[in-house]
Amino acid sequence: MTIQRIAAFSHGDTGGNPAGVLISPSHPPVDKMRAIAAEVGFSETAFSAPDADGAWRVRYFSPQSEVPFCGHATIALGSALTRQFGPGTYRLILNNSNITVEGSEDGGLYTAALQSPPTRSRPADADTLQKVLTLFGFAEDQIDYRIPPAIVHGGADHFSLTLTSREALASMAYDQEAGRRLMEDHGWVTIMLAYSESPQQFHTRNAFASGGVYEDPATGAASAAFAGYLRDIDWPHGGRIEISQGADMGMPSQIHAEIGDEKSGSIRVSGTARIMQDR
Image 1: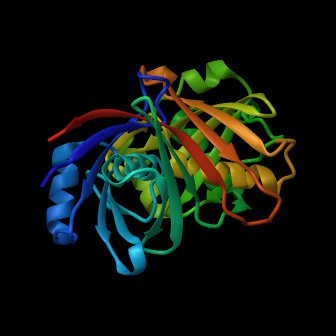
Image 2 (image 1 turned 45 degrees about the vertical axis):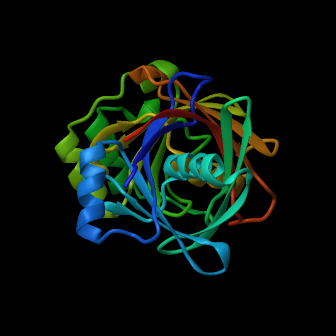
Image 3 (image 1 turned 90 degrees about the vertical axis):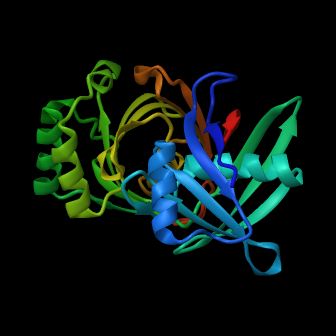
């Protein structure tokens, strides 16, 4: 049983968000997958096994829980499938949806692009917003209301809060246990903090206490959900946004999201993948 360790959404040959990937003839028992994810210690590990008609059945586990969809682990899986079986588009069967990931390789550099599950969003109510502000110590005048606080979904729920300055984003700090309770109470996988440098360029940070991780260096699922939300509010995205994440924790990552016109439609999220090691 070989666990591949791959950093997805890397910035060239540095940074990215490490994920574990196991490609096996069948899934191990759930308790074994939980134990493997905890031993690997990354924010997620993707477990993939062949299903009918050439598709792959995929499950994602963090060190603390199973999650319905993980973007960076899907990019890592796409690069691993490309590495093992060659470039192409792979059909993935998740717990709650079916998606695809397309992988390619050029001179030892792997690139993958996923099509997210359908997206949706809803405004955050005042009481919930106040709980998030209290958790991070932000004031209401630090909110960029051009992109109002919201619950965003692209395979899983995330709370989205856009701030008025890069400095506010860099100052992110919170109590992890309090964050875990808040995320679990509301069913959020992460709380995504963002800053808009321009209509197409964003900086983000993602608190991931629900998965037993303080912060995620690159979060493809939240990025897809956020991109879908920008479409919902008619943000001038021009069909594509670039997201820089992980710089504040020394793991610079780059996420590309392509936004179609269809409301609630899938978002194409892509990035490079850095092979770390197999074990």
